[in-house]
Length: 136
Image (cartoon, rainbow, N blue to C red; front, side, top):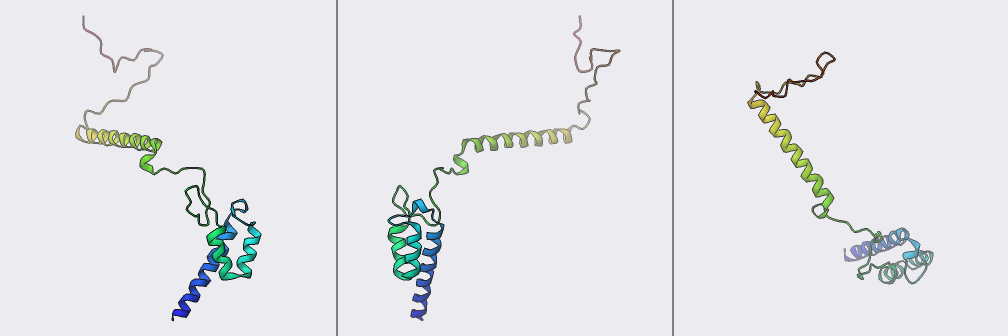
């Protein structure tokens, strides 16, 4: 059982190294050109895979190795750190609250709904339905 498990682990490492090497951009491969790494992994499966993982894979600035993905120049922010997203959420929350308050006030006072404004006509160019006339 132990031999089967070790064999499966070695095959997994070899497959992982092949895929990782194939997906790594050519300029990012260290020590040797990318085609040479692929040939080494195929010709010397166990040793080639271990060498790729130890000295061939690209590294980030901090020294940690990258997997099949390369580091991007963009920095990703969590949603709670992105100021634009927070402003969007704040505006959305305000719109929802205003909408809910309008619905509640309309349900509580159905008779006090505002009448729609009438458009001025040619006969009456000034619309005084919504304005108060001061008393003299």
